[in-house]
Image 1 (tube, one colour):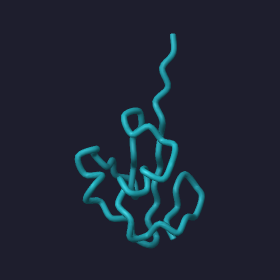
Image 2 (cartoon, one colour; image 1 turned 45 degrees about the vertical axis):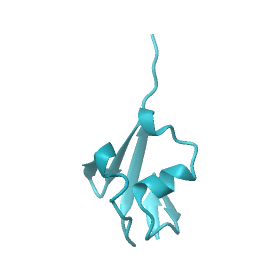
Image 3 (tube, helix red, strand yellow; image 1 turned 90 degrees about the horizontal axis):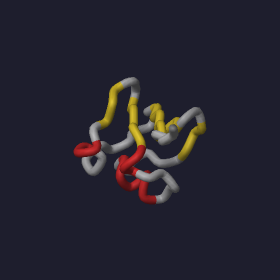
Image 4 (cartoon, helix red, strand yellow; image 1 turned 90 degrees about the vertical axis):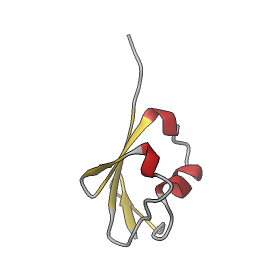
Length: 64
């Protein structure tokens, strides 16, 4: 199980890219943190989520 923004999900074994593909997140407007470390967009395809991982996904919102 992987905790994403506080919710436990059964996504261990998927890459960050694979997880994002099944969500409504706009990958151009988010930041991903895995276990306290930023995951760079260039690493989404190779970062495999493991049991016990904790992801925080933050969406950027424009305004003015």
